[in-house]
Amino acid sequence: MGRDLRAASITIVSLAACSALESVEPTTAPHGAASPPGAPALNARVLELIATYPDGGFGGYRWPARRGTSGTTRDLAVGDDVVATGGDGNHCVGVTLEVFWRALDECPGGIAAALDARRARAFKRTWYVPVDRGAGSAEALPAFDLGERVAALDDARPGDFMQAWRADGLGHSMVFLGWQRDERGVIVGVDYWSSQPWTDGLGRASTTIGIDDASFDPAQVYLARARCPTVAR
Image (cartoon, rainbow, N blue to C red):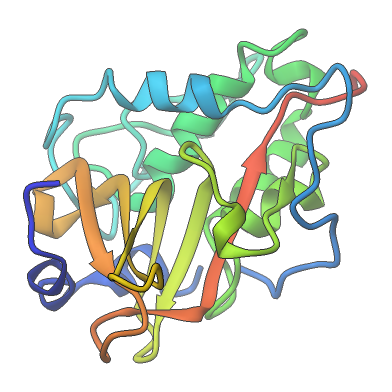
């Protein structure tokens, strides 16, 4: 990922930008469950989509977002109802929501088969983590029947969505790419894609897990796997 894990962790000085005033506590949901028949996981499409975003593009990292914008690079809408407004500058919950939204729109029936405007706004609010140390994307996906929680860190797959917190209360929303392990096979870091100040906005980065106060707390790493809706709404 082109960045030392410990150095990346130390540079996380604005992580709360993508978490402060952001999810509710995780709800009880299927853990590590496979996608139901007819509702494929969206991981492959998520990975294809993030590869199309230029590093540092669309105005770079900005928290909070400019007034009237949502931290996304484009408008996200259900029909004529704009749920998130794009603009220059982006942040982690904005771009991860955007990538999921674009992947979901390619499912049968598109966005409208999964969410009406009212539910879409509630979904966005949950994704944006309205409560300190909430699960964000890992709360929104199962709560709205658009994915399943991943129970164990070892069950994570590239293209899953991840919300993680440091012991000091700083959090981040990401697309999971892979774990980094020590010689014993213990998880010591995570590779991910998102928008963050230490990559000047969009890009891939790495952060340690459970190493020091600048690491993500392994007890506060939440993952979920998105899928197409099983029933048109």
